[in-house]
Length: 305
Picture (cartoon, rainbow, N blue to C red):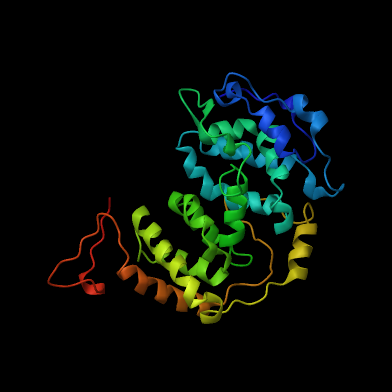
C-alpha cells in the first residue's frame, strides 16, 4: 500500500467532481503503481460549503487512521461495523448533502485514498484496487458513502446499535442496503431483528429473506401495514449543525446519533413477523426440509454453509 504524506493532508473537506475523479483514477492508480496526491488535485477541488466545524478534515482523517491501526491484524471487512456509526457521527450531513457524489470523491481521492487501498486492495501490499467505484462511484459501492448511508438507514434514532449489526454482515452491505424497502425505517429494523434473533443465520438466508420481503412490499405497502413516525427535522438540524460542540467520537463505545425519533417498536414487530412468515417459503440454496414435517417452523432446517 502506498505511503501517505501527512504534509499533503487537506484541512477542509471539499468537493471533487465526477469528471475530475474519473480522469484521476488511471489504470496505474488502480494497480497501485501511481499514488493519488491531494496537491495534484487541489486546484480542481471546490471549497467547503462554509467555515463551520463540520467541514474540518482532521477528525475524519484521525478516525480512518484509527480504524486502520485498530484492525491492522484482522480482515479489513471487520472494520465496517466499527467505522460506519463513527463515520456517520463525525461526518455530520443531511441526506441531501450525502447524495452528492463529489463529497465522497473528495474523501476517496484527496483525504484518504490510502484507506481505500487498505480496505479494498489486494496483493501482498494491498495496493491493487479492482474497482474504480471504491474511490468514486455509486452511493452503495463507494468506500465511504456505503458506510455513511448504512449507518443512516439502519440507525434507530440516536441508537447506532442496529447499524453496527447491519454493517457487521457483508450480505446486508452488499445486497440488502440497495433495496427499496430499506428506506422504510420499520422494515429496515424488522429485517435486522431476523438477524439478531437468529431467525436467519447465513448470507443465503438474509439475502432470501430480504428478497421476498422487498418483493412483497410492492403490494403490501409497508407504510400502511406498519406506519413510521415523522422524524424530528429540528433535532436533526441541531445535531448536524452541532459538529464540534458535542463529545468527541469514542473509539471503545458507540456514540449517539441525532435524537430525531426512534422507530415505532410495534411497527417493527409487525413486519418482523410478516418477514419471518415470508421467509418460511423463500427459496434458499442449500436449505432442506424434511418431507415428513413439511415446511413449517417445526420442520425447518437451515444450512450453515
